[in-house]
Image (cartoon, rainbow, N blue to C red; front, top):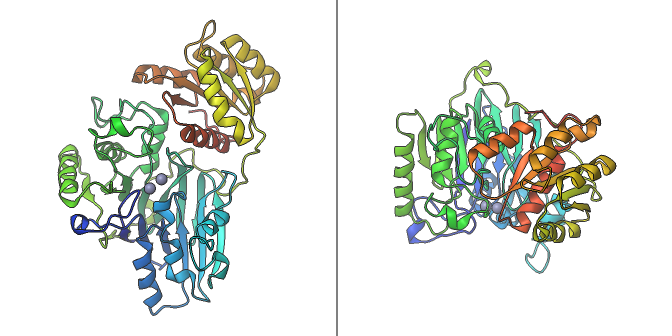
Length: 449
Ligand SMILES: [Zn+2]
Ligand SMILES: [Zn+2]
C-alpha cells in the first residue's frame, strides 16, 4: 500500500516561510492499494495538488473513492478545487458520516453555491455517488474499511483501511474521552486506558502498520483547549503504543506550530516511544510512505464490536431522551441544547423518578447525573440493566460527571454505563455525542462490554 500526504495541517491552511517543511495545506491523504484502488482521505486544501496530479495521469478515466471524516472546512475546502470531479467519464464515490439531519450532498453543494463559488456541484462532469455512513465495516473492492465515530464537536468518522495484508488507520479530529488521561501514560504506559471509549479507540488502532493520528496539541496546551475535539500529540503516542502499532504519523498540525516547534514536539514524542518499537514521525506535505504487502492471514482480526451495517438511515428526530439531574441548571442546559434538535425530552430530579419514567416511557437514551439524592446514577443504571424489559436493559445510559478519577469511571462501566458526559460541556459536543449514542443503538449494536 502506498500512502502520500498532500495536506497535513489542521483547522486552517497556513502557507508561508515557517511551515515549508511540514506544509501549510489542510488534511488530504492519498492511499493506493496494490491493485490500484484509489482512496482519498479528506479533501482539505491539499486536495488541489493531488487533483492536478491525478488529472495529468495517463490512466483516464479515473475511478476514485473519497472518504471524508466530517465536513468542517479544513476537511472539505479543497473539494471545489479537486480537478478529477470536473472531468466527464470519471467516477467518484464519496463517503461521510450521515445522521445529523443534513445529507452529505447538500452540505458539499452548500459551499459551492453561487455566493461562494462559480461552479455548482451539479455542474461537475464526473459521475458522483454519495454515501452517508454510520459506524461499521464495508468493502471498497479488495479494501476493507472500518469506520468508527470519533470524539469531536461535529459528527466525525475515522477510517481503518485493510488491504494487501496492511492496515492504515486515519484518526483525525478526535479528542480523548478521559480528560485526565488515566490511561497509558498514567503509570503503566503499556496498560489499556481506563475509559471504555478510549479502550475501543485503541482496539480499533490495533496492530496497524501506520496510524495517522490527530496530534494538534501538546500536553501543556491541552488544558486550555479541552472540548475543542483534538488530541495532545503525546497521548496519540500512548494510544499507538497501547495498540501495538508500527508507525505513527503525527497529523492535523496546529496552524500556530511552525516547523521548528513541530521538530521539538516530534522529539518529545520519540522519547516517549523510545524502546517500544513504535516509529513516530510528523507527517509532511508531499511525503510518501510505502507499506510492504504481507500475507493476508497476517492481519490481526478485525476489532470487536465494529461489524455493524455501514450505511443506515438517520435516527428518528422524535427519539425520546430522559434527563435526570438534581441540578436544575444542568437540566435546563441540556434541554436548551437538545430540544431544538427535535428530540422529545423527559426530565427528573432524582433517581427513583428517573427509573419510574424510564419504565413507563422506554426512552431511546438516558442521561443520568452520577450524584443524585436517593438512588444515584450508578444505582439507576444497575436497575435498568436488570430490568425485565429487554429494550430497557439495552438502552444507552450516559452518566453526567465532573472531572472524575479513573476509578470511578471504571466502577460506572462495571455497572453497565455506556459512556460519560463530563462537565463542563459545550452544546455542540452534547449534540454530537447524543447523535453518536443514538446511531450506535439498534438491534445487536450494544455488545455488552
Ligand atoms: Zn480538522
Ligand atoms: Zn473538525
